[in-house]
Amino acid sequence: MSKTNKLLLALSFVGFIALGLPDAVIGVAWPALRAHFDLNQDALGALFITATVGSVMASMATGAILSRIGIGELLTISCVITALSLFGYTIAPSWIVLVTLGLMTGFGAGAIDAAINTYAATSYSARLVNVLHAFYGVGAAAGPALMTAVLAAGQDWQLGYRIIVGVEIALAIAFVLSRKQWPPPVVHHEEHRRPARLVETLRLGKVQLSLLVFFLYTGCEAAAGAWVFSLLFESRDIATAAAGTAVTLYWGGLFASRLGYAFLPAATSPDAVIRLCLIAALGGVVTLALNLHPLVDTVAISLMGFAAGPIFPSLIATTPARVGPRHTANTVGFQISIAAVGLAVLPALCGLVAQHLGLELVPILLTVCWSILLAAYLALRRSDLATAL
Image (tube, rainbow, N blue to C red; front, side, top):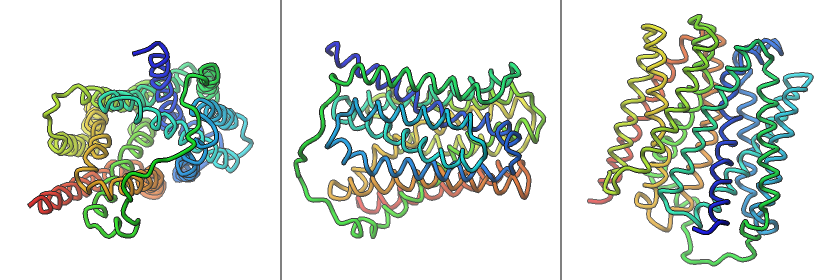
């Protein structure tokens, strides 16, 4: 690998770390934010929605943008947008202003995600791409750890976000300095095999099942990351440092298992990994709902993160074999879109439940969602086997 490729690979890793930082930090920052703006528990859903809308907008626009500017320029602009929006959080005069800034945060994050994945998909092996995705977990674990340290030291939540702003600015500088090394704008597109029409793909029963699986999985992952700190800190009277550590272990577990999956033997069945992970995650959330002991809660949360890690990339990897080449592009696009919806809807639903029925109902709701997810995936696999026969 040349020095240029090594540099871009390193920047890609750092880019995914920076992508995870603001995504996961909100779970620890939320009680302080809620007190600062005098909000109800369900108010967090609005921020998830605007960030999701921004991310979807960026993902849809990335192809057109990359036909005009290079990946390096897009990454630079995206980091600047993210930094400005996060800094805006810290000076926002009202919750409505902060929620509106969520559009910018989502757009910046979505563009970073799409741009790095575009480069990685055309430049690296599948295993290296899996490792790249694992580094999102580094940022997702570091964000809660950072905010926990800030709050435990008696500092305001704004300081935690300003530190992340500094990381985004540093990354933007790195991208602008390396912009000549990144691929130039894509000025043409070769048409290989004409894909199926969108409606034709949507009519497939296995595609409909896969959309349910993606919606539930991403929703469950995000909802746990967003609400376990509030559950432990506000409902179960666990200290800030201990509750923040549990959230950090959740995201750290996601990183560890995703990284470990990349090094499993090539003959390992993705289906077997997904089944095992779904069952383990369900066991973790059931244990959390039982409220046995603070230490048991921490272990259960760690298990949930570790089990969740390989599910998303494994589902993506099995999509071509499931639907065939004509439907692959459409199906992946649908899956990514519905995953973004899940990221917004289920955490918001947990907020409504927490506000009106209490935080202790959140792990019960997640138990129901993980159970439906397991059933939906088993139905999807039966559909695959029936097609194969």
